[in-house]
Amino acid sequence: MCCSKGMDYKHDKYFLCSKLAPIFRVICPLHVKATGIDSIKISEHNIGHINKLHPAIRKQVTELLLSVQKLGIRADIKASIRTIEEQDVEYRKGRDENGNDIEGKVRTTWVKGGYSYHNYGLAVDFEIFNTDGKKNWDFSGYGWQTLITNAERIGFTSGYRWAFPKNDPPHIENSLGLTTIQLKALYENGKVKNGYVIIPKVKSNNSIS
Ligand SMILES: [Zn+2]
Image 1 (spheres, rainbow, N blue to C red):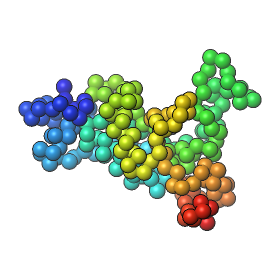
Image 2 (cartoon, rainbow, N blue to C red; image 1 turned 60 degrees about the vertical axis):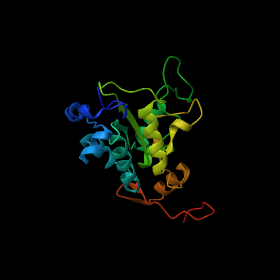
Image 3 (spheres, helix red, strand yellow; image 1 turned 90 degrees about the vertical axis):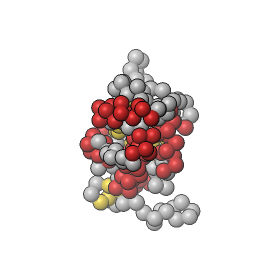
Image 4 (cartoon, rainbow, N blue to C red; image 1 turned 180 degrees about the vertical axis):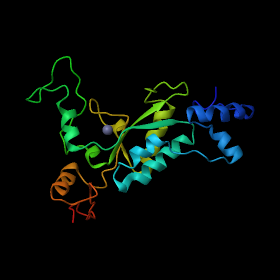
C-alpha cells in the first residue's frame, strides 16, 4: 500500500499509487515529483467550508490543504464558521442552567457564543483519514503533525499546543491580531460586511482603530 505516510515508496509503486489516488484522494509525493503531476484539487466538501470562512483566511486554508494533500494526507474540514447562536447551543451541551457540568454528559466547548474564533469564520476543525478511509486519531503521528506544523508555518495557532484540558488538536485559528472580545464588540457595533467582521488595522499598542 502506498500513499499512507508520504514515505517508503519505491519507483515501481507509482502505478499503484496513481490508481489509488482517485479513490483516496491522495497521491504519493514522489509520484508528484517524478511526473510533475500537480493535479491535486481541493474537494467540493472543503471548498464549501472554505467559502464560509472569513475572506481574510480563505487563501491560507486553501494553501494549508494543498500542502498536506501533496504529501498524501487526506484532511477534511469538519467545522468552519459557527454562528453565535449555534455556539450557545454547543455551550449548553453537557451543562445545566447554571453552567455546571451534568454528570454523564460531555461538554463540547469552553466558550459561550461570541467568544470562539469559529463565530467569526476565523477557526477551522479538521479530520484526517487513513488510506483505508478510517479516521486518524493519532495526533502525534505523521499526518496530524504535518498538518499542525504547516498550519503554524502559514500563520495559524494550533489547538494542539494548548494545555490540557483545553487542548484541541483538530482546531486551528487565526486571530488576525484581535481577541474574541474585540471581535464581538466590532460585530455588535455593526462593523460587518457580508456577515463578516471588518478587520481594522492593528496599532502597535494593540488597540484597534
Ligand atoms: Zn474548533
